[in-house]
Length: 203
Figure 1 (cartoon, rainbow, N blue to C red):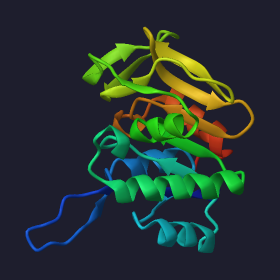
Figure 2 (tube, rainbow, N blue to C red):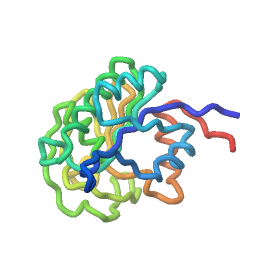
Figure 3 (tube, rainbow, N blue to C red):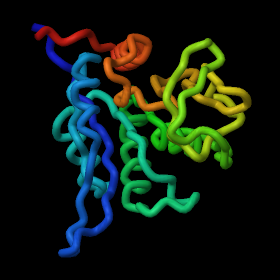
């Protein structure tokens, strides 16, 4: 049986409950998608220091930055998530571990590499076709129209950057949600397996 590769996965910070509890959340569809990709996702809390120490203690071998909400500088409501994801990106980069950014996660990668995020129309709750002819889902209000080295664009939709990768590091960003495709897209599965060096899990 092939051992799954353990990777950290970021979570949303949810609004306080009626009792003032602050909780974290993650779409359940991430777990079967990652399993198909040969990965096991370990949810990390939006407590920057705790998240990094947890990732180190568990020997995680990569990082997935998930979607949901805007970055704080663009009106997002969860500065604790911004801080945590930036700290985790620093940890993964220093350890030369692979990183996948999805939607908001891709925006965080773009922002961290100096790309400008602008408002875009017609990209929320729609399907559109990428420059390579592939249809994907779309749920984002902001995106980049260009990137600078060390990032390079790998897919667009019109002028909007939809996918990119780092020229030297194992860092990839995609603006669609692979976990929301049922069944999983073979192209997404191949992309994730290639990035993390994983193989299908035996069932």
